[in-house]
Amino acid sequence: MTESIRPSGEYDGTYGAQHGPGNTYPSPYPSPYQETSSPQEATSPVNPEWPPPPARPPAPAAADAHAAPAAAPARRSARRGPVALLAAVAIVAAAVGGGTAYGIQELTGSDTTASSSTSTNVVPSSQKGTVAGVAEAVSPSIVEISAASNTGSSTGSGVIITEDGEIITNNHVVSGASSVKVTTSDGTQYTAQVVGTDSSKDLALIKLDDASGLTAATLGDSDGVQVGDEVVAIGSPEGLTGTVTSGIVSALDRDVTVSTEGDQQQQQRQRGGGWPFEFGGQEFNGDTGSSTTTYKAIQTDASLNPGNSGGALIDMNGNIIGINSAMYSSAQSSASAGSVGLGFAIPINTVKADLPELRAGADG
Image 1 (cartoon, rainbow, N blue to C red):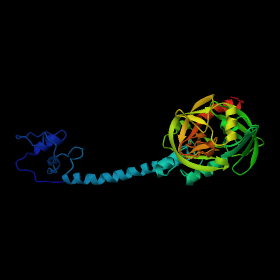
Image 2 (cartoon, rainbow, N blue to C red; image 1 turned 180 degrees about the vertical axis):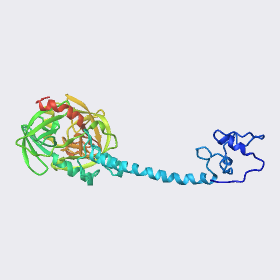
Image 3 (cartoon, one colour; image 1 turned 135 degrees about the vertical axis):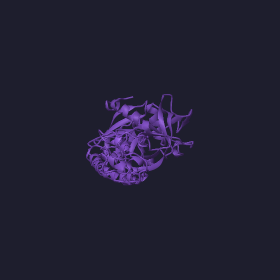
Image 4 (cartoon, rainbow, N blue to C red; image 1 turned 30 degrees about the horizontal axis):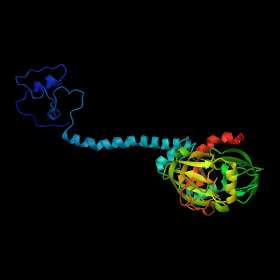
């Protein structure tokens, strides 16, 4: 117990009146210790004859006040043990449960590609975001289509959507054809039958004979496409199977008008070159005829040339976001047409909405 010098003239009864249970000693002078609780009270001298002080801790001395903060870190350090253990348990729980990818990404900062019902990454992680990666992943799902009729023949492209050989292409690629031949990326040739057509959307569905084990493309979500997104186009321009070009989405919801007349399509195939269409009030690649239809298209500056029709417009995750259908050319003759960086694709969501009717044998 600490001691200090007691001022002279103070009466012993003062301390006893305050601290001694059951003892009262009157004092003629007021005591400075009756109304306040201060460090002086804790440092008063002790007389062995006085009653013991009450069972309460004395006010901390100045030295104790400095010692308290030093003890606080020790208490905090003791608490950190269980917290660290709980954090470790949380990490294990995230890895064991359904949140594995998210938990690891958040805790390690790794770049984990997100997948959803509308956008799946089919490109190998080591090649994610590269044209080469997209081409390697998607090229096996793109085919060359050769359609023949009594007025001529034409070459276009198509996208495999089922392992047993369902293929989406443009209506103008196969309309009026008496026979359809398909060549896959590995050079295998098949005979195909036209299942359904929809001239109002310039879409057609064909089916390979006796096919199985093919690589089906992943259909994305064209509603999520934004202007400026990088894209890849794969097709067979001028019969050059598996040609890959790249660019960006230049615009959305462009009004593209095409012919719905079968004889007009056959005449165009006989002349060769690109498919005639209207855009911005002008006709390109020839006369669209008197019967036409207009659809909303994705505009891209990826190079599209005659033969790309029916091929794929692909995002950088390898998802099909459009079916290439028309290209702008400044050439006077469609036979000498070439890409000038203005191509158009039918949004894949339009294709998905039309698939049930095409599979049911629509003929329009």
